[in-house]
Image (cartoon, rainbow, N blue to C red; front, side, top):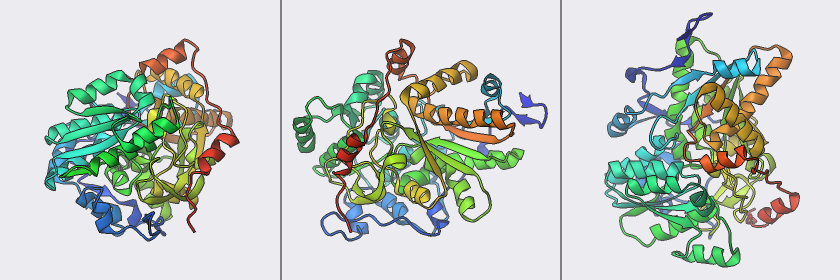
Length: 459
């Protein structure tokens, strides 16, 4: 099916031959790099050797690479990608019609794999490099479960043991996600748990807490430190994760160039930053070079607003204060967000790359409430036939806002947003919305201040 006016297909599928063979490293085009990670004990930049104590060696090399614009995708990873990629870029014609907007809306759909999200793009790469290093197990955390599911799939593919600490609130909301991870052979523990020192401490300090990604990260790292041939894997935030996710943006860029699509606005949900960074990477790289003037909008939940209401400061990436210090927009490592249904966006900080791009004015940020997000998700489901994940629906809501502005002004802007995954494991959330039981969490200045007080004072 094609758009009769300009002969652009409604659903754009690239061929296997057009699948990118390299990842794009946006740091090679950044005029100024983000601040280095710091050792919390010495406040000196973390060394390569120190990072290798936690992370897979090849990933540390990618993390510290600031010069190579493109990095080859290993053949085994590329072959795995071919099972689910390239993913389609779709014209949302029925959503446009429902909104009565002159805007052209496209979405990049990353939900066409069993994990249901974009997370598999980095999970398979991390599992591959772990296998190459001779590791036998990996520990990780997961919020809504997309990352845990993706890494469980990847570790199963390479026969690597996986332990997942899943934010307790999400584990309770999404028991089927837990079962999918277990089906792929992963051990899943709701966090905070009683199996780690940090989990027991947080449970004692905050009885009944539903947990946070920061807490789950601490538990995963603690367990990793007790094992031989084991490393910790992170599904967002870090530079190497955004590198792997750049395949999303590269495919979008290829599709746009092939059919003469010129985006005016690119929108992505933002929790830790992996989806957003991957989607916008090649475009923001050209924006830095002065080759385009695309508006790039990061969308986060109003209940966990690191970009829109946070501080740009050094902070721990976890609640237990085990990780290096990262310069990022943060609402404090001790902040425990409300148990909203977009579990993948409940992280207290933002990717150092995304934070730096935001601080330098290359991207914008906005926050939206939970009820309006599900209203947008429902409209999208009825018009476009895909049930979106709550995280993705944040981008949908912001897209609708921009499309309605075009309706008011009569401008025919082209908007592309990232549909990061499906919401088939989020039916408890849709049930609450449909029954009228869903509420918005009101984050007060007092709530924020409590989180800010946990940010370490670093000169």
